[in-house]
Image (cartoon, rainbow, N blue to C red; front, side, top):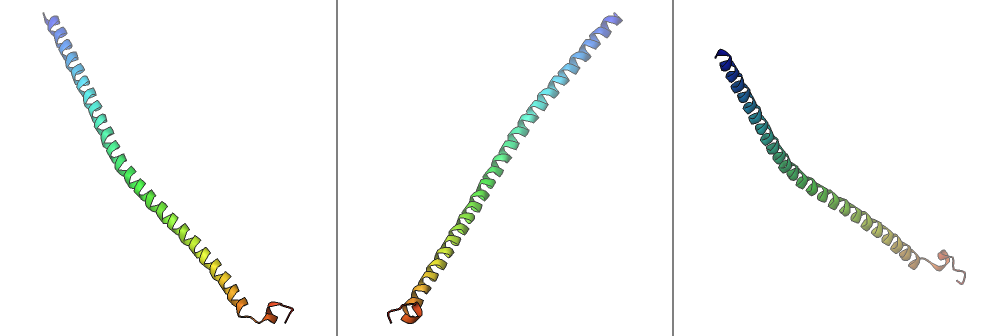
Length: 100
């Protein structure tokens, strides 16, 4: 009888240990799923911020490039106009014309 009680106790202890193990596995699985979903939400949030920052930086770079092109065009245009003005108001002898 005593041996049967010991065997039953071992079986019940083993069963309890297995139940606790199974419960722990389920708890860990649920915790991992929760962590995964939280990490996904956080990643989406930062992805949006990163895309916004990228768009702003790209816009600023395009603006700077456009400004540089505009300055180059104005410089070229002003140099051309200055040369035309210089020739228009110069004496013919200064321009190298030989028919004066």
